[in-house]
Length: 222
Ligand code: DC
Image 1: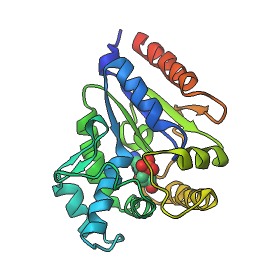
Image 2 (image 1 turned 90 degrees about the vertical axis):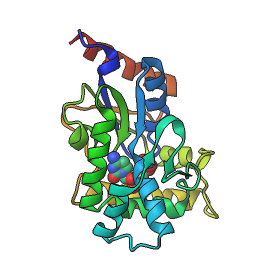
Image 3 (image 1 turned 120 degrees about the horizontal axis):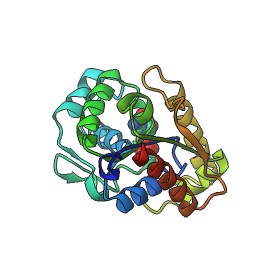
Image 4 (image 1 turned 60 degrees about the vertical axis):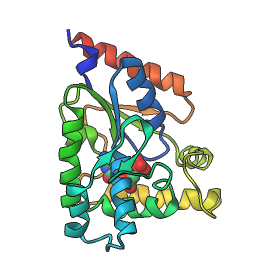
């Protein structure tokens, strides 16, 4: 029987589907490390904006992805020692991260870091965890929700500043990023054939966590 502490649990899906809340709860319950890979893309993008780099320059942004100290442990996000936990959740970094996420060298450098983080057991959330980072993950979940519900959750998210934008603008910008994330050439957001699809639109966080824990129990018996 596999030990739940060594399981690799991949949680993918678009923004606002509930990945963060669910991944954190599952990691806490199982005593596993939780890694938010979106925060890694956001931290690199924050630094690229800070350093005034062109966001389509793969080689320049890749230098950040290879050289910067990036730490996403325990809900605090740091890059080269700067606490950017709040600074990475702004409309400007939303857009920058979506652009940076298209860059192939940046992606492969971050994927290598993510694999190193996950060795030995992890709950990892992102867009390509079950398809690219850990194609052999023990549990693969794809969380989704209606566009309206995802925009509502994002607007209500206290950790994410909306800037001057209202709910309609949040929904519009989110739809644009979802489209970019799902149609880009490298590692687009797609449902892995062996992932369990969960529509969370009408589910509580507890419902979703229970669903994931049931899949974990099944995987631990294999
Ligand atoms: O999950 P998030 O909204 O914090 O992600 C920020 C951006 O990074 C978003 O445009 C999707 C992208 N991303 C990605 O391409 N691959 C991942 N594994 C995680 C995030």
